[in-house]
Length: 68
Image (cartoon, rainbow, N blue to C red):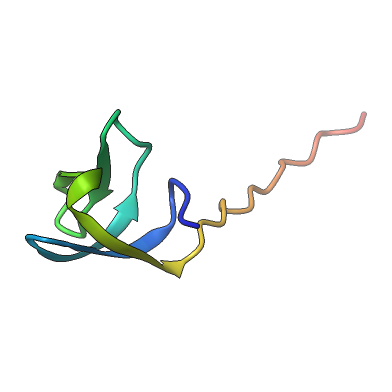
């Protein structure tokens, strides 16, 4: 199952697209392409969605506090 933030390959009637899955919009799936553009594809037009890489948030380094 693909979740927002996952890199996916999406096969639709109009073609195959690869990008980052964004949060859903009603009856559409939204992909952010490598070009920076977003595309919306009607769920009814989607044949399959394959996860290429699961989203993993970047680890943040917590700054050390000064101890007086």
